[in-house]
Image 1 (tube, rainbow, N blue to C red):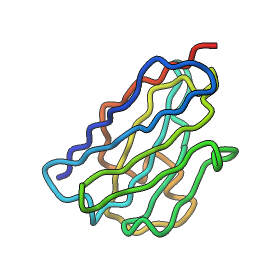
Image 2 (cartoon, rainbow, N blue to C red):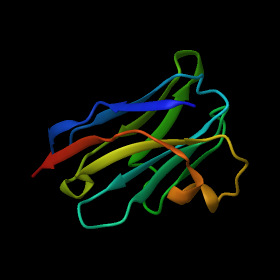
Image 3 (cartoon, one colour):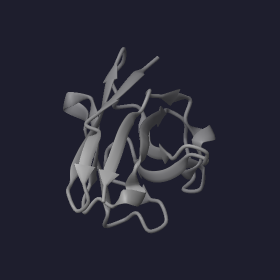
Length: 127
């Protein structure tokens, strides 16, 4: 099975940008669709973005598009989440998740679609 490791988080100032990375090991990431979620303590995981196996199809959560950009490089076994113009409300632990299953556009926005998860990377945005 695939193992996922997120990186790229940190403490940043409002208005800055970050690129989070999701690295796969154990197996090639190519057969997997990948999503990014985030979680604030005390709240449910929130869907941020999804990218198909080829990278040609993406979905974003409500009010996420334009603020987040998801992409992947299958040759490098990597998926990325670019976050621009960071705001304090973006402070959260960000997780990448992967699945080989077929999907509907509704399914990929729910955590239950994804059997494989990374440990998360903390993003903290100071005001």
